[in-house]
Length: 274
Image (cartoon, rainbow, N blue to C red; front, side, top):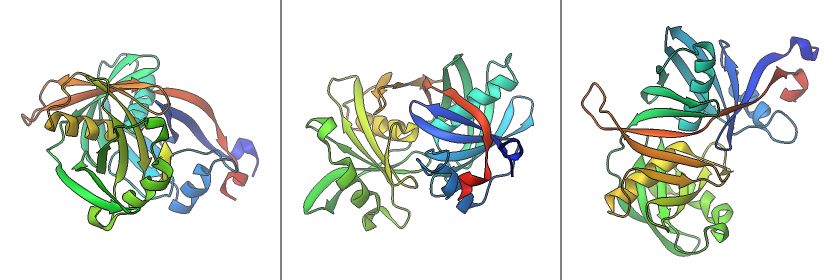
């Protein structure tokens, strides 16, 4: 197969969380997603999504992590998908993205920034996990996918994300699916820094949108944060959270905005699947 005959794709990035995007194409098999997402020997990405236009200003997003497993929600992927959808409908002021965790309302901000309105997460619960010979207090919370949030009082750059992250991510007390794990520095007040170890990628990623929402919800529950909030991700990009109008169900909504850009366009050759 020549490169010209390969699969058309886009490489997109949401605050450093990068994805292979396929438009109006079926999702590949899990093994193909794994191969394509491997860095160094293939395209390389944190995950892959397909985007399908259902109707005017309405799209369906199907997302899988780098291990090929489907995930109900990835907010950075959703913001990148919205960026692609607004390219198709440049006059739209908002549109709906269907996900496995429900519908999201997306809004354009500028050429490299999009926002999504999401349900405010319900309160999580405090729990302490035993890992690497130490007790690790934190919060277990669901923000479309499960998360474990812990406050880090030391130098966040020195946090043991690579050693402690995978142990917590697969901790039996978090259930069979495990959870994304986030190390959060709440200083200074009104914003926070966050580092994330994500399941399905099984490594630290440069940003996690649902993780920012989860960490903000835990900080608000403790009275240590209030909206609006700026979160500084590992990439250095900020993701911003603010209150949004309630949804039609009457439930509260938050608006998550930040960097979402198209990095490259091309075709995936056969060698990428080796």
